[in-house]
Length: 253
Image (cartoon, rainbow, N blue to C red; front, side, top):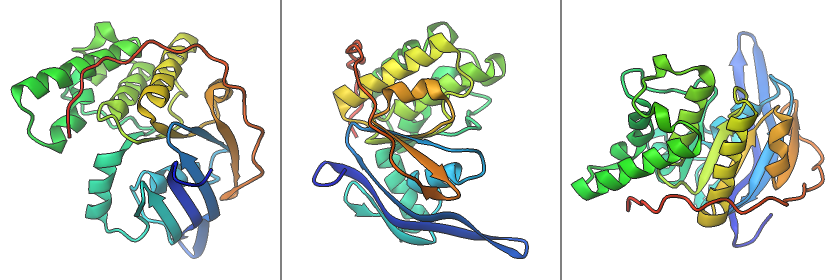
Protein backbone atom coordinates (compact mmCIF):
# COMPACT_ATOMS: atom_id res chain seq x y z
CA UNK A 1 0.00 0.00 0.00
CA UNK A 2 1.38 3.42 -0.87
CA UNK A 3 0.36 7.02 -1.32
CA UNK A 4 -1.08 9.55 1.10
CA UNK A 5 -2.87 6.90 3.18
CA UNK A 6 0.39 5.16 4.12
CA UNK A 7 1.00 5.42 7.86
CA UNK A 8 4.03 3.14 8.14
CA UNK A 9 6.69 2.49 5.51
CA UNK A 10 9.71 0.22 5.86
CA UNK A 11 12.27 0.26 3.04
CA UNK A 12 15.31 -2.00 2.99
CA UNK A 13 15.24 -2.59 6.76
CA UNK A 14 18.14 -4.67 8.05
CA UNK A 15 19.01 -5.70 11.59
CA UNK A 16 22.20 -7.48 12.58
CA UNK A 17 23.99 -7.98 15.87
CA UNK A 18 26.89 -9.91 17.34
CA UNK A 19 26.23 -13.17 19.17
CA UNK A 20 29.55 -14.40 20.47
CA UNK A 21 31.76 -14.88 17.42
CA UNK A 22 28.87 -14.75 14.99
CA UNK A 23 27.22 -11.88 13.13
CA UNK A 24 23.49 -12.63 13.19
CA UNK A 25 21.31 -11.13 10.46
CA UNK A 26 17.87 -11.00 12.09
CA UNK A 27 16.16 -8.97 9.34
CA UNK A 28 17.25 -8.78 5.71
CA UNK A 29 15.87 -6.05 3.47
CA UNK A 30 12.33 -5.80 4.84
CA UNK A 31 9.86 -3.87 2.64
CA UNK A 32 6.46 -3.12 4.17
CA UNK A 33 3.81 -0.43 3.85
CA UNK A 34 0.79 -0.21 6.16
CA UNK A 35 -2.13 2.15 5.67
CA UNK A 36 -4.40 3.76 8.23
CA UNK A 37 -7.10 1.34 9.36
CA UNK A 38 -5.27 -1.69 7.98
CA UNK A 39 -4.44 -4.85 9.92
CA UNK A 40 -1.35 -6.70 8.73
CA UNK A 41 -0.59 -10.12 10.22
CA UNK A 42 3.01 -11.34 10.02
CA UNK A 43 3.32 -15.10 10.40
CA UNK A 44 6.32 -17.36 10.68
CA UNK A 45 8.11 -19.82 12.94
CA UNK A 46 9.88 -18.86 16.15
CA UNK A 47 13.38 -17.46 15.80
CA UNK A 48 12.88 -16.03 12.31
CA UNK A 49 12.69 -12.32 13.17
CA UNK A 50 9.10 -11.58 14.19
CA UNK A 51 9.93 -10.09 17.58
CA UNK A 52 12.85 -8.12 16.13
CA UNK A 53 10.49 -6.70 13.51
CA UNK A 54 7.93 -5.61 16.11
CA UNK A 55 10.68 -4.05 18.24
CA UNK A 56 11.85 -1.96 15.29
CA UNK A 57 8.34 -0.95 14.18
CA UNK A 58 7.49 -0.16 17.80
CA UNK A 59 10.60 2.07 18.01
CA UNK A 60 12.12 0.06 20.85
CA UNK A 61 15.33 -0.41 18.89
CA UNK A 62 16.73 1.12 15.69
CA UNK A 63 17.41 -0.84 12.50
CA UNK A 64 20.99 -1.43 11.39
CA UNK A 65 20.09 -0.05 7.99
CA UNK A 66 17.17 1.07 5.86
CA UNK A 67 14.42 3.65 6.18
CA UNK A 68 11.43 3.67 8.55
CA UNK A 69 8.77 6.32 8.03
CA UNK A 70 6.02 6.63 10.64
CA UNK A 71 3.32 9.22 10.00
CA UNK A 72 5.78 11.06 7.77
CA UNK A 73 8.64 11.06 10.32
CA UNK A 74 11.90 9.32 9.37
CA UNK A 75 12.42 7.36 12.58
CA UNK A 76 15.31 5.09 11.57
CA UNK A 77 17.99 7.54 12.64
CA UNK A 78 16.37 8.89 15.80
CA UNK A 79 18.01 8.53 19.18
CA UNK A 80 16.43 6.63 22.05
CA UNK A 81 14.84 9.72 23.64
CA UNK A 82 13.37 10.90 20.33
CA UNK A 83 12.01 7.43 19.60
CA UNK A 84 10.38 7.35 23.04
CA UNK A 85 8.57 10.64 22.39
CA UNK A 86 7.33 9.47 18.99
CA UNK A 87 6.33 6.08 20.40
CA UNK A 88 4.28 7.66 23.19
CA UNK A 89 2.51 9.92 20.69
CA UNK A 90 1.68 7.41 17.95
CA UNK A 91 2.08 3.79 19.07
CA UNK A 92 0.34 1.31 21.33
CA UNK A 93 2.20 -1.94 21.95
CA UNK A 94 1.45 -5.43 23.24
CA UNK A 95 4.45 -7.55 24.26
CA UNK A 96 4.63 -11.26 24.97
CA UNK A 97 5.74 -10.59 28.56
CA UNK A 98 2.76 -8.22 29.24
CA UNK A 99 4.93 -5.72 31.27
CA UNK A 100 2.15 -4.99 33.77
CA UNK A 101 3.02 -3.12 36.98
CA UNK A 102 2.52 -5.61 39.87
CA UNK A 103 1.40 -2.99 42.40
CA UNK A 104 -1.30 -1.46 40.18
CA UNK A 105 -4.82 -2.72 39.56
CA UNK A 106 -5.91 -3.80 36.10
CA UNK A 107 -7.62 -0.44 35.53
CA UNK A 108 -4.64 1.56 36.77
CA UNK A 109 -2.33 -0.43 34.49
CA UNK A 110 -4.54 0.50 31.54
CA UNK A 111 -4.68 4.12 32.69
CA UNK A 112 -0.92 4.47 33.15
CA UNK A 113 0.07 5.54 29.58
CA UNK A 114 -2.30 8.51 29.82
CA UNK A 115 -0.91 9.54 33.19
CA UNK A 116 2.64 9.37 31.84
CA UNK A 117 1.84 11.70 28.95
CA UNK A 118 1.04 14.71 31.14
CA UNK A 119 -0.80 15.87 34.24
CA UNK A 120 -4.57 15.48 33.78
CA UNK A 121 -7.24 17.83 35.04
CA UNK A 122 -9.95 16.38 37.27
CA UNK A 123 -12.37 16.21 34.33
CA UNK A 124 -9.75 14.62 32.08
CA UNK A 125 -8.93 12.02 34.72
CA UNK A 126 -12.61 11.14 35.03
CA UNK A 127 -12.80 10.68 31.26
CA UNK A 128 -9.62 8.60 31.32
CA UNK A 129 -11.00 6.35 34.06
CA UNK A 130 -14.20 5.89 32.07
CA UNK A 131 -12.23 4.95 28.96
CA UNK A 132 -10.01 2.48 30.85
CA UNK A 133 -13.12 0.92 32.40
CA UNK A 134 -14.79 0.67 29.00
CA UNK A 135 -11.77 -0.94 27.35
CA UNK A 136 -11.49 -3.57 30.07
CA UNK A 137 -15.20 -4.29 29.76
CA UNK A 138 -14.80 -4.70 26.00
CA UNK A 139 -12.21 -7.44 26.59
CA UNK A 140 -14.36 -9.21 29.19
CA UNK A 141 -12.72 -7.92 32.37
CA UNK A 142 -15.45 -5.67 33.79
CA UNK A 143 -15.41 -7.64 37.05
CA UNK A 144 -11.61 -7.51 37.35
CA UNK A 145 -11.01 -3.74 37.36
CA UNK A 146 -9.50 -3.70 40.84
CA UNK A 147 -7.52 -6.94 40.62
CA UNK A 148 -3.73 -6.74 40.59
CA UNK A 149 -1.77 -8.88 38.08
CA UNK A 150 -1.01 -11.57 40.69
CA UNK A 151 -4.75 -12.30 40.90
CA UNK A 152 -5.14 -12.60 37.13
CA UNK A 153 -4.37 -15.62 34.98
CA UNK A 154 -2.07 -15.24 31.94
CA UNK A 155 -4.95 -14.80 29.51
CA UNK A 156 -6.46 -12.05 31.65
CA UNK A 157 -3.08 -10.31 31.93
CA UNK A 158 -2.81 -10.46 28.15
CA UNK A 159 -6.20 -8.76 27.81
CA UNK A 160 -5.17 -6.01 30.25
CA UNK A 161 -2.10 -5.40 28.08
CA UNK A 162 -4.30 -5.27 24.96
CA UNK A 163 -6.61 -2.71 26.59
CA UNK A 164 -3.64 -0.64 27.75
CA UNK A 165 -2.28 -0.49 24.19
CA UNK A 166 -5.49 1.22 23.04
CA UNK A 167 -6.06 3.76 25.82
CA UNK A 168 -4.10 6.59 24.15
CA UNK A 169 -6.02 6.07 20.88
CA UNK A 170 -2.78 5.36 18.99
CA UNK A 171 -2.39 5.67 15.23
CA UNK A 172 -0.58 2.30 15.16
CA UNK A 173 -0.76 -0.78 17.38
CA UNK A 174 2.21 -3.17 17.27
CA UNK A 175 1.57 -6.54 18.89
CA UNK A 176 3.83 -9.58 19.29
CA UNK A 177 1.81 -12.80 19.63
CA UNK A 178 -1.00 -10.89 21.38
CA UNK A 179 -3.65 -13.65 21.39
CA UNK A 180 -1.56 -16.71 22.22
CA UNK A 181 -3.18 -17.18 25.64
CA UNK A 182 -6.79 -16.35 24.75
CA UNK A 183 -9.66 -18.81 24.51
CA UNK A 184 -12.30 -18.54 21.80
CA UNK A 185 -14.68 -16.14 23.55
CA UNK A 186 -11.88 -13.82 24.72
CA UNK A 187 -10.38 -13.79 21.24
CA UNK A 188 -13.72 -12.78 19.70
CA UNK A 189 -14.04 -9.85 22.11
CA UNK A 190 -10.52 -8.65 21.34
CA UNK A 191 -11.02 -8.91 17.58
CA UNK A 192 -14.31 -6.99 17.81
CA UNK A 193 -12.56 -4.24 19.78
CA UNK A 194 -9.73 -4.03 17.25
CA UNK A 195 -12.23 -3.88 14.40
CA UNK A 196 -14.00 -0.98 16.12
CA UNK A 197 -10.70 0.88 16.41
CA UNK A 198 -9.94 0.27 12.73
CA UNK A 199 -13.31 1.53 11.52
CA UNK A 200 -13.96 4.36 13.96
CA UNK A 201 -10.46 5.71 14.61
CA UNK A 202 -8.47 4.52 11.59
CA UNK A 203 -6.08 2.60 13.84
CA UNK A 204 -3.57 0.45 11.98
CA UNK A 205 -2.31 -2.86 13.38
CA UNK A 206 0.86 -4.85 12.74
CA UNK A 207 0.55 -8.18 14.49
CA UNK A 208 2.98 -11.09 14.59
CA UNK A 209 1.18 -14.34 15.22
CA UNK A 210 1.13 -18.10 14.88
CA UNK A 211 -2.56 -18.11 15.84
CA UNK A 212 -4.51 -19.09 12.72
CA UNK A 213 -7.78 -17.97 14.35
CA UNK A 214 -6.63 -14.37 14.16
CA UNK A 215 -6.03 -14.29 10.41
CA UNK A 216 -9.70 -14.04 9.41
CA UNK A 217 -9.71 -10.37 10.44
CA UNK A 218 -6.39 -9.43 8.81
CA UNK A 219 -6.35 -7.19 5.74
CA UNK A 220 -3.15 -8.92 4.62
CA UNK A 221 -1.14 -11.89 5.81
CA UNK A 222 2.63 -11.96 5.23
CA UNK A 223 5.15 -14.73 5.86
CA UNK A 224 8.44 -13.92 7.63
CA UNK A 225 11.12 -16.58 7.28
CA UNK A 226 14.87 -16.26 7.91
CA UNK A 227 14.44 -12.51 8.35
CA UNK A 228 12.77 -12.01 4.98
CA UNK A 229 9.16 -11.35 4.06
CA UNK A 230 8.06 -13.89 1.49
CA UNK A 231 5.36 -13.83 -1.14
CA UNK A 232 2.20 -12.05 -0.09
CA UNK A 233 -0.76 -14.30 0.56
CA UNK A 234 -4.12 -13.46 -0.97
CA UNK A 235 -6.11 -10.81 0.85
CA UNK A 236 -8.69 -12.42 3.09
CA UNK A 237 -12.41 -11.56 2.95
CA UNK A 238 -13.58 -9.01 5.46
CA UNK A 239 -17.23 -9.95 5.91
CA UNK A 240 -17.84 -9.25 9.56
CA UNK A 241 -20.55 -7.29 11.38
CA UNK A 242 -19.98 -3.72 12.42
CA UNK A 243 -19.19 -3.75 16.15
CA UNK A 244 -20.73 -1.50 18.76
CA UNK A 245 -19.17 1.94 19.06
CA UNK A 246 -16.36 2.56 21.48
CA UNK A 247 -17.03 4.58 24.60
CA UNK A 248 -17.16 8.27 23.78
CA UNK A 249 -14.77 9.28 26.56
CA UNK A 250 -11.71 11.03 25.20
CA UNK A 251 -8.64 12.67 26.68
CA UNK A 252 -7.26 15.40 24.48
CA UNK A 253 -3.52 15.39 23.90
